Image (tube, rainbow, N blue to C red; front, side):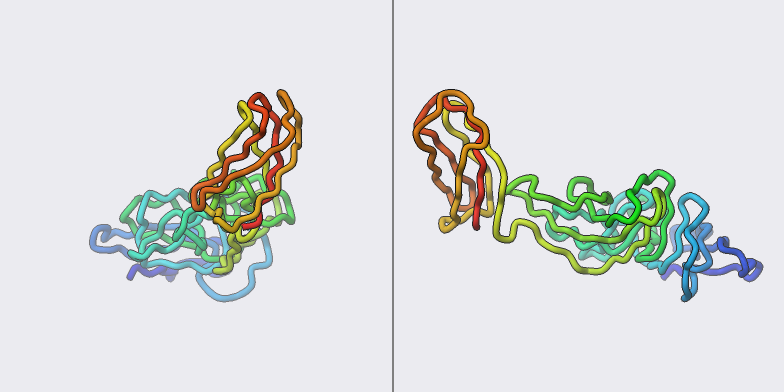
Length: 253
């Protein structure tokens, strides 16, 4: 298993030190990294990093990358024991376990920070707000939790940290996540020639749909109704074949 080694000549009073990732058979020369000293030993980390692309926190080594990984990608350990891109909208690809310290090619050893403080000058966080695993970009981070974008979505919310400045965040990769679309859906559907079919794989024969007109369009009918195809979706129909209203939809699954 590769090991992180602190050179004997390193100045232990410094906040950053050179470390060496001992070589594997396919890379006998190993690799050098500059890491915060706090990443290599227990203790508190009270000051935000002042250098771009640095961090302070615990590291996991000894596992390879399943795919090409970019620096600060959020990752999970797959069933083959390799790091892959975490995704809040892909079954089996969450929760995230940490961030990639340095860009890593598929099949190469990866270093993962599993918590602590990270600085990346490319970030532009809102200070004090949570940071979430993205449900739209594999490996991505954002400050907008997965929301009710689509009734067919399978997103999960995992808060993984919070911002202390625009480019510095504190991370804590707990295994806790919250599924979305457990019981309800609220959204809109627009009639075209008096009807619209919506894909919704969560809907069942016992689901209850409440409809109301949000915006009137075309020739208004005297009523609107729906039919359900369990596991597939539902169809909303007006008794006017020329109605184009926007319909508010509320579903209790």
